[in-house]
Image (cartoon, rainbow, N blue to C red; front, side, top):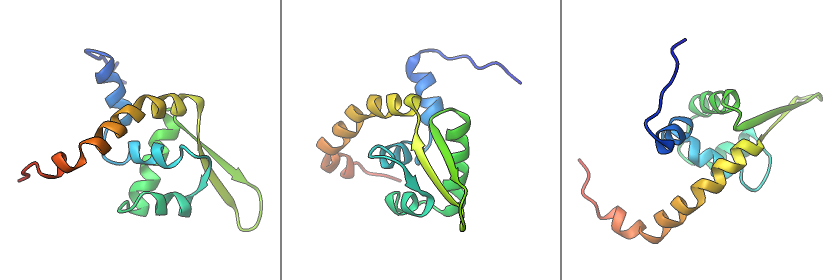
Length: 111
């Protein structure tokens, strides 16, 4: 396994939360644990396959905790770990910035 190197803290943080969906999943779990179906509804546009993949990566990174309740049918809940909560807290100002500037961002021409 190749050792990772980072040029700065932003580089390391973006490696953990990179991509479109992880920050949105973190945001959705901010209020508390959610079952898979509820989490998928909280992240519009994400496919089941991608949500499963992202949750597995986030669990492996220590951001998300997956708890299986032994019952019939099985109940699985996802929640943020303390590490995930700290990342979510760090992302809050970015979300606020996005809210404040959303109209301007929407006006940016895209290819």
